[in-house]
Amino acid sequence: MNVFLRLFVEFFQIGLFAVGGGPATIPFLMDLAERVDWYTKSDVASMLAVSESTPGPLGINMATYAGYHAAGLAGGITATLSLVLPSLIVIIIVARLLDNFSENVYVQSAFRLIRPAVTGLIAAAVLGIFHTALFTDAAGEFQIPVFQLILCAVFFGAMNIKKLKKLHPAVWLLAGAAIGIVFQL
Image (cartoon, rainbow, N blue to C red):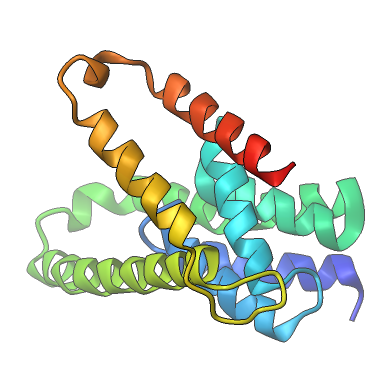
């Protein structure tokens, strides 16, 4: 199958079934990493880090990254547009039918059942990313990152000190980046 058609199909499906926004795309991206050679599960952690530090919705940033990684600029555009297309179609349909179904008991019940499932998918994805990012080395082997855990605890404690709470989040990001760069040298 052509890489662009495959990108379109895969990301259209992700966009269609990832109910709950960008974080809900993570389990789908992890699954896709197992099925294609465009990126690895470890790359998903990198995608997440990059997506969280760039402006724009998480899912779209991750689709763009994955598509670019698979097929360059055109792949990034294809993955991004195909991720957004199902939402666009659904929004148009819902906007036309909303008045008829907003008070429908079945529709309200369906959403009450969907919310816990989405929460579970997001929680599973967060735990998977947490495990990959913190407890897996570059070779994919389990490790206990003592320094990183201590650094995390120090940052968490510092951010909860009354005077330091007022610092802009960018200061914390820059401090973390600087420490990371220093300890990689």
